[in-house]
Length: 272
Image 1 (cartoon, one colour):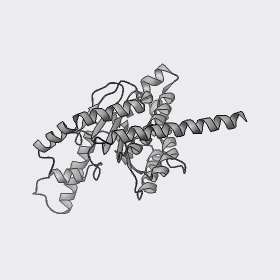
Image 2 (cartoon, helix red, strand yellow; image 1 turned 90 degrees about the vertical axis):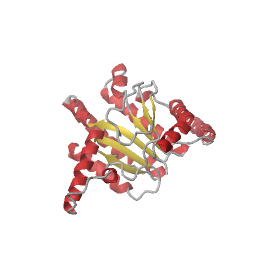
Image 3 (cartoon, helix red, strand yellow; image 1 turned 45 degrees about the vertical axis):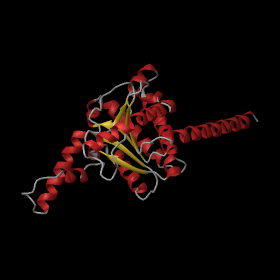
Image 4 (cartoon, one colour; image 1 turned 135 degrees about the horizontal axis):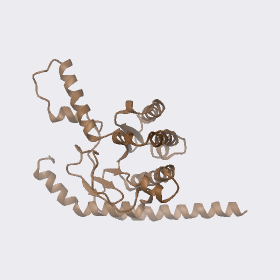
């Protein structure tokens, strides 16, 4: 009886919270809502040090990610991109890297479960980065997720793993040059359109808003090509502590500078 009452109360609380969020997002919709938000999920390890170990920080961080994805998609955001694992992170302690690879595979499999957020919103999953640097089991899980969701018509969720922006740009240059050689166009100079076509992010709108948690203001080699006119927010909470109010405040700040950003784009010939 007690369990039934607790379940009933929990369901009522969840429903009330959902209704309140919808009211909040309706108010936000009077201003420009970002089409694409990118997150640098900074602070998992610092959170873990204050609690009970590395795995704790990343596990709590995953729950934060799921909640944040839900808030974004309820708000009307069409694309969410996260910086999950940099190529530079492979320089960490091998045991930590192995633990993170195992955790990553586990969480990818969770995303594909029937009752997951991915199924609910018909999300299409992308993995951006040099996937051959990953453990084979993780790489296969990533490829499985992309194949399973490639025909989904809902929002797009892109995960940057084994990624740096400089590596992405170098990869794009190499691929563009290879295409030129194959087409026997050796004397023609590469164009910006060639490079952009071969970026991992091809087909995805540039981010309107980048949010880096833990108060840091650096991009740390993340989407450098794509963020020339992107608004950067750096809320103080560590990623596992990032919540709805932090997301809403970041969107409000984006709305405050929206007209300025659009004028800059127009002045520099990005619009029209």
